Figure 1 (cartoon, one colour):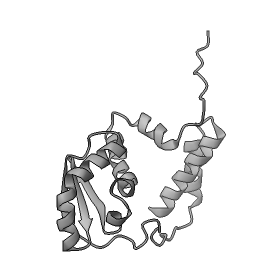
Figure 2 (figure 1 turned 90 degrees about the vertical axis):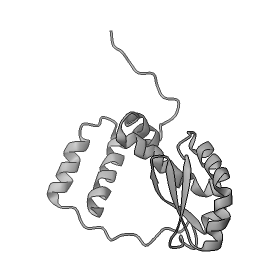
Figure 3 (figure 1 turned 180 degrees about the vertical axis):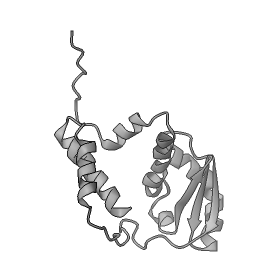
Length: 157
């Protein structure tokens, strides 16, 4: 008797797979916390996102960097609403409190990415290590994606 897993209706997103794998581990908690940055603009709107951004998250407290005092004052009045919208978009009651701090202004265009870091060339040993680690993955497409992720990580670190 062979146990076969049911066929997926559609390919699963890597983020969903990682969340499932790390669900009850510290890394899973960090992945969930990372959603705050992903839903920030959608939660607060373009105008606030242009002047404030998440800086850190710890024990239910979200630290937000705000570019000037008038906006800090305005956001003080909006804390409860921001918390409610963030938690709704995250799908969990993660954010309990907001701490506002003066900080550098976010990018002028929130969709613009910072200047990409220079990447180094992988050594032969590093490429072999990636191949060895990825060889255990039976799905060729997933193996390729994981190999690229590992390579990018090594190039940048």
